[in-house]
Image 1 (cartoon, helix red, strand yellow):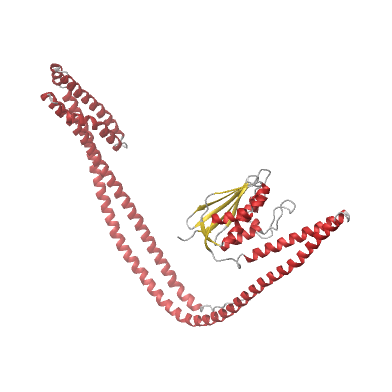
Image 2 (image 1 turned 135 degrees about the vertical axis):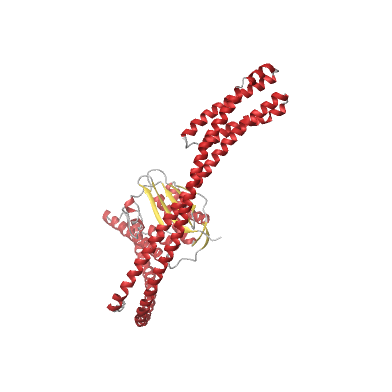
Length: 486
């Protein structure tokens, strides 16, 4: 049935009248967008600059803090040494020991902070050497004092070597602090300038945004007036369209009713036809078998061969009819989807296939399987078809089929993997089409409907099915089933 929907075009005068104002609105909206994008870019640039200068300022302050900390530690070490030399009491060495423990970590932290400044790295190397000499001088005097070599300790102190080292350390640290303070001053100035630029950009953005909004609102107001005039002319067309839609809706409802009735009649026809075909086929098969048993050997070889053809043809026709019935009933004779334990489903499948498994000397293994929302009977049919295929399309080695399931966000992904002959990638889609076979009946028996039934079952469960395979290595069939609701 063909339906034609016809809408009257707007009068040409309406089109030519609304076109200029629409173009004007688009241009103004585009201009406003460009202004806002530009302002956002400038604001982002200003933010990045402020962040960069703030980080530089913080870095300089941290460097100054670390330099002061190193100097303070050296002073503490010297203070502890002097107290011990004057009093001979071990308690005065506590600042010295703390300084010895913390000086190396502090220098390493300082080295990390100034890693991007080669000049300060060189100065730090010199500073580290001076500190090592100073600490060695302190340690020497302390050891002499402990060994009661007072004159030797006094001689080291009187040499004024320690004071000279301390002055050099202090001067070098002050030099580094001076350089860093100058950098800090520059970065503070830069940050202030960047903040002022950001404020100007913000103010300019407010002004330009308000101006853009004014232009756009004016254009929209004008366009609204034009559109109201157009709506008046469209109202009549809408009324006419509603009448036509109602008319077509009635026709579609009638067509849908007829289609549902035709589907039911077709389903009943398929069932009756297949059922009626079964009886004569069974009769042909039965009489052919009787003739074979009674007269085989009494007739010539051609007659025996022809009887074999009759029996084989009737058997294939019965299998084909059964498979067609199973295919047609997947969507119409299925049970409601309920919580189904796939462990029990697989157990039933293995029980159904135990003869085939034994004859093929096959092994079927599986990982723990979940419970899903499904039709148990159809899930048995699905797994049974896939596992049976894994045993049928085998290589010379003994068949092995493994069943597994992995949980994803809203579904379970099942996999049935075998070590069979494999499938070329060009046939991955074809194998799920009804009556499509890749091998002759003499090589591998079957009707070419099994995988089509699997696809229909999976789709009835709201999932999808696909295949991955390497010829000569094996095949893996994947299908998805919705997770059970907890």
